[in-house]
Length: 71
Image (cartoon, rainbow, N blue to C red):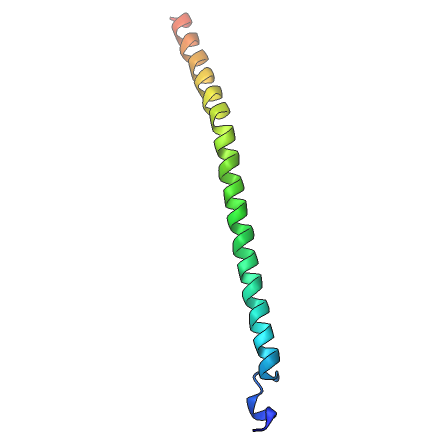
């Protein structure tokens, strides 16, 4: 069998295989990074959520108090 018959896009099968593996890895890395970002975002949100809700409740509470005082 002649190697030229096996060439894919000007690459030998071994090279083509290596390229596919590399492409696959970059996709995996991207997915991993994306998932990590999402996870970090969620954990940050969970950490900040109590502060945000407390802040909102206080803010809302002051507004209610102000309304009652004006009446």
